[in-house]
Length: 414
Ligand SMILES: Nc1nc2c(ncn2[C@@H]2O[C@H](COP(=O)(O)OP(=O)(O)OP(=O)(O)O)[C@@H](O)[C@H]2O)c(=O)[nH]1
Ligand SMILES: [Mg+2]
Image 1 (cartoon, helix red, strand yellow):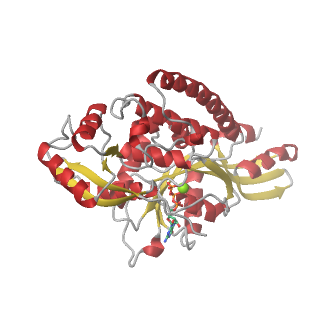
Image 2 (cartoon, rainbow, N blue to C red; image 1 turned 180 degrees about the horizontal axis):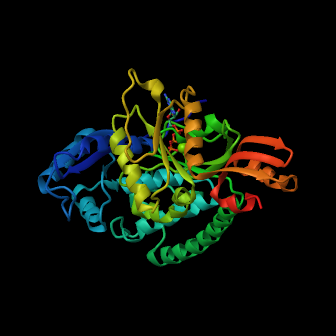
Image 3 (tube, rainbow, N blue to C red; image 1 turned 30 degrees about the vertical axis):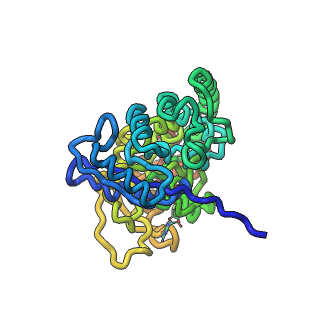
């Protein structure tokens, strides 16, 4: 018996370079990567140098002819533009080229759709997809059937995506209500965590940087880690005991990418905002990626967009095992940096020490004499803080410790 392998879609990538330094080539490399993850093979690329993106057809007239020829030569099934197309651009390109027209956003949405596994994730993806489609129905004809199969037709829960405008509207309203419910639940969990005084560290970074691999290595979390973009969609939280005995919670988050579709940011806000409620940020960087600097920039930009500011940050330059020589690394936005390999475990002890150091700075040092009646407070310190020294004297117990500001009042000796 043999199976017929489903034929991959063949696509042309199209990008517009608006100024000399805007690394459109690299952006297309990434788009090819995204296309591959979504199941399409790149068979050609076209880059136009243009002062601005053409408002009507994305590229200019001359380029359109070039694309037509290339479509014919390569027998491609469609094109993917590197920026989000307006409904008008989409419609015009379809008419001009008479082929399937996709954009970066559609591809990312498609990947998210096939990755979503929790209820929240599914609602968020469907919401983002519907909002994207809502304004583009004319571009696709009245239904999505004009897309044929492949990219752009995937939906969470295999929902039929061919809806008319009116249905889309009511479905969006329904999904928004459902999302509110799940959000409330998330807020409750978050509140419980903060009441427990366990510091939360959000692991953020560009997609494929190695966030999940790191969390798995540190905590044995068993999260799917893959050489694919957006392997993780749903935040996973695991406990970790640092060398000093201090317990923390590590939260794995969805990866960032340049030109992250705004509908996705909107829909995934509560997921992305995990970082906002964390006590500190662990920024994982793929130091073996030639685009490292650019990726770091995107991460900080996205964090800023999400309103995550002024939190302590440790940047971990990951995948050191892939580097032939070590480079000096810098991150002026971070409070501290460390070189690690989540794969081999190199540098992970130092990383944990650095996490401890930063957390310690958020704590107050105390040196106090407790009466024996107050022994319960020492228990509290042991649990939530870091007990450095205790000495049993006749007049009481002398304690040196670091305690979180949040419990300082509770452990003060009277
Ligand atoms: N050589 C090497 N590969 C690594 C290292 N850390 C992660 N990887 C690989 O990088 C790929 C991506 O890792 P993930 O842990 O899935 O990355 P992620 O940041 O969670 O990615 P998303 O969830 O997609 O945002 C996987 O193939 C990992 O095996 C490392 O230290 N060295
Ligand atoms: Mg991941």
